[in-house]
Image (cartoon, rainbow, N blue to C red; front, side, top):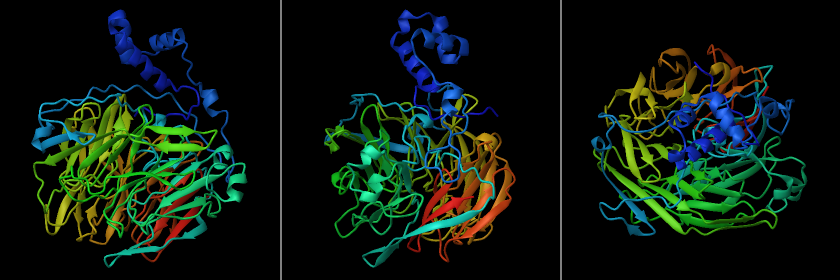
Length: 597
């Protein structure tokens, strides 16, 4: 299988340059010969290189991409594998007869600034939204949204460079408990991924960090929203608090996200009703911890009165648009009207265009196949890919808010869709959970799908027979990890309650065929696996399970290389990795920093 490796360039990346060239071709279509147009869109290297040179667009060389590689176990700066140019993607989406949206979606509606568009009124974005490859999402260091980027494929940043293949606990941070209506929310749960990034020394002077943190030459901060209603801020290497805990009073299941432009903004949605009322999204200044904006609570446009936000949003940097799916069945697209002065250390958000899109499924009732999006959406170009509680995987045109295709995932789908470029085509990996009673009261098949992102058709599916328990579902609650480098032929998925009701597996599947390469058995796992790499491309997989362990697995053979006991209880949260440090929270009121040796 062709490699699809990308670099972290400061100059314009080759794929960015090519995308901009294609945009130029579209705008000047009549002025260019059909030969040049065809060459550009076919990705012919010689023609592209010549045109880019004529346009004065400089792309990053391999040497430039790797000359700043930093060695050393405790390095704060990222370590980057030598990249290859990203292959171009042939992508013009449409539907097949099987994925025609009306088969599964009965209706949709759009509201713009509190005005519902009447039937037949077309919506058009004022400023077209377009995302590039996952590597283009941000130039920030670290993991800044759930699974890192708009492809949902990057929960590890940099290199682990393991030699001993062990896991060692370096520090812990205590968390608390939030009780509301007799229900106790402890520690960190699903999806529960931390955010990790490095802030410049200049920016830190404007932040509400402790003096010691402001004065460090380099500092990498872990930002962790927890079930206890608090956001924790600690230094990656030591676990030492960098600023006061931010107590917002609502339980947080999802990861939230940082702004990909490097603006000091945290977006985080509450996952349950609290003493202050309905759940909502918070837009928070990381300069002083102030709440800049909230939305989503008690929204009268919603057809489901469930205002929870377990997903992690995306931000389109070019159009200043926040894209946030909600469990009420509303997708929010908010023009933030952000004002940020880095030198003065001032920040404002004053939304001036709030667009909402909602839908109704053909199978939706009050008791099954509910509305609502708990998973995080993936995006490419002007298209959003999102799964929902009702077994619908949807491709939505973000600039017209029209559905392009919808695929049946059979059941409540909480794992996020993951995009992958393979041989010049865009694919998507996803798997549903098994919600007890919807398809069966005992066991049901849970498929892992490979989907053609262009039309939603199924390339292959590999099924596991799974059990389920009320409120603690079997099947797949995690998000699939696509391999790269020496693991480029594989995907990794944790499947819960298969074999028996308390067990599960980490499965390695072949990308091309869906065949099972190996399985690693453990207690059932809701936690998403993470692939980590050495400089030579060797890959290993870490994951956490309900038996309280973190496992280190050889990505090619499935051999268990190490097992680290973290808890006597379950681990639901998903780790994030920065170089050789993994961070994960557990339900037993602790956050762990773990060295990958």
